[in-house]
Length: 108
Image (cartoon, rainbow, N blue to C red; front, side):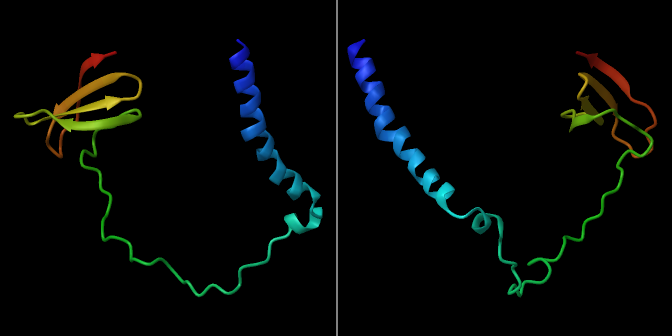
């Protein structure tokens, strides 16, 4: 027990006490000096370094709607897809663009 108290006291003096010293120096400065920031007017950067990728987002299954989907996977060796929803439902449907219904596999 005596060793723990000594170790804890030594640790506080060694690490925690010096950690507060730089903060006291910051507080001692004038308050207006910290609040103002010089404007950055010398930047010559315009735009982004790379053009945006030529991708478009399209709906793969436009007739299906899901509530908060989290993942979409294809069943191995099948033409069926599985969708997991945040609420715990897993739905299955055929892998066709014109599919209009999904069936419930499991509701957790």
